[in-house]
Length: 379
Ligand code: PLP
Image (tube, rainbow, N blue to C red):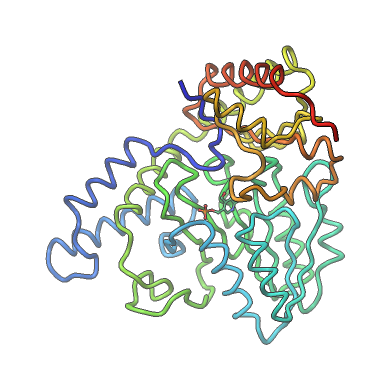
């Protein structure tokens, strides 16, 4: 049996999402722009799917622009905000623990003469509003703060950050990478007070290859691509109807079961912590992290990459830092200022609505076995 405990990296596609994509590919396969019944049928389905995603996010259909992934949404939000604000300034505020999909565009922009202030989190994995207050300037054109950190599960004070930005740098746009918060925490873009917000399908039981950028209505946002006019001319290209249909189905299901799913994942997180403290008290929690699905752990004195490989061989899937680091040390653990042993031993366990207590038990058994097999590193 495989214990899949890496749901922050990606999730299993739900049967309803897979069926919806099959239907879109084999029955409703017309091009939504085509002017015959098969095309208009696809266009109507697309509109319904946009409404489903909007309903899950708590916004209007016209505020949803489909993208290919979270990375695309983050990149577009940042570049678009700077293009809109180009006459007002060249200063960006973000956090040092954003996903690479935000940090890499920021680094690239620094090379082009933009100034970026990276807010460093405290030991709880959260940025402070005082630090944001000190960072905001009249020439700040973008503030980008993630909702849930993908490695720590810490929830950032996005609503308060947006409010502060409105009062101290009213011309700046506020973007939120909500890829890890979507359907894991109750929120709406309007309640957060943000202009732009990114989500991704494959984190919520839809396939890879689809996401959405929320663009607040009334904001005249620049297009990502130029072409045939799809997505209100903002992101043209024939719509990925199969992925979008699956994303909508996953959103419908996820929205319906969200309260129970959150309670289930929270209960599993507590269960895992209780089991670990009973059997392996050396395994410590890096930060509490309020998100229900992410548990940031460390086994000080051991190397997480080795641990993750051994756990994998025992059928337990977890990750050492974010799956996107590809072996590079995690900038998130470094930003927390963890000591070397804690940093090197840090790994992430992440749940979904379908995760079972049996999978958590398998993790605890495998960790005990791995620890018995491995020597602590001599660092
Ligand atoms: N932002 C966060 C917080 C993430 O966790 C991820 C994926 O891990 C992304 C952005 C990128 O999303 P995608 O894999 O859809 O490009």
